[in-house]
Amino acid sequence: MAGEPFGPVIVGVDTSPTSLAALDLAADEAMARVTPLVVVHPVERTGEAALRVLAVAVARTRAEHPGLAAGGEVVVGDPAEVLAERASGASLLVLSGRELAVRMAGRLAVPFIVYRPIEHPPSVVLPRPVLLGVSGPESPVEFAFAEASLRGAPLLAVHVWAAPADTAADRARDDRAAAIRVHEEAEHVLVAALERWAEKYPEVRVHLAARHSLDVPVALTAASSTSQLAVIGLGDRSGPVFDVLMRRAHCPVAVVPHTAT
Image (tube, rainbow, N blue to C red):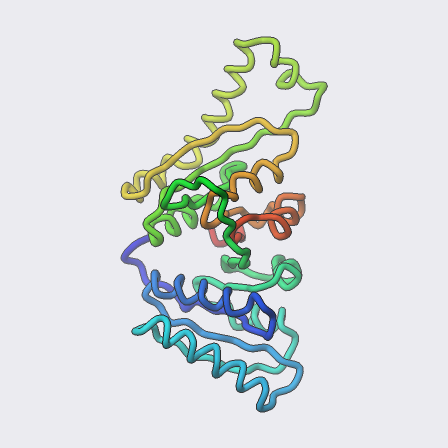
């Protein structure tokens, strides 16, 4: 919430093409939080090449984000272990790759953002919203509101309910009253999840979307095409939502452990 202190933002860098984009994203997050940025370059062994990668990353950050306190370190060790250890006490970890995110998801107690490029469809309403996938009371609602507030963006909260073909919800297609009732129940899930935080973040415009789909990950992926950030809970890691968004999201994806909500 605005006014509360933030821990540093940690970003892992390497020599991949997406590393600098993740670095820029992390710097933006640190600037918005008014907190330091720590650039970590995990390596198998240290040397001049590793020090050069770190120096370029820190110099780029300081040049493009004047006033941001930015420092860094080269650390020898497994990248997942190094970044998990360095992220302890941080407010956010930013990663550039899906593979590393999958390895780290179960061991992190802090939110992390995995960089994905923002796509540019022909017509997009600006500012792009922060997308929140709402599945129940453990959804990362507070984090999503805080991100929307920091970015000066609206919040698009989406609850997708899936129903197999042999359920009453699916048969209700021919029953208008039942279909309306099912939709109202889905909207109630959204309102119940967001009500408390909407009062604490009155500056954030909220848009609710209750949608029926047999494929929840596909529905959220489609919604990400007009968003600037997608936010999901860590509980989705065991299902297809995490996996699909890591591979197909049209914007960066923030994953929030239940312990951090």
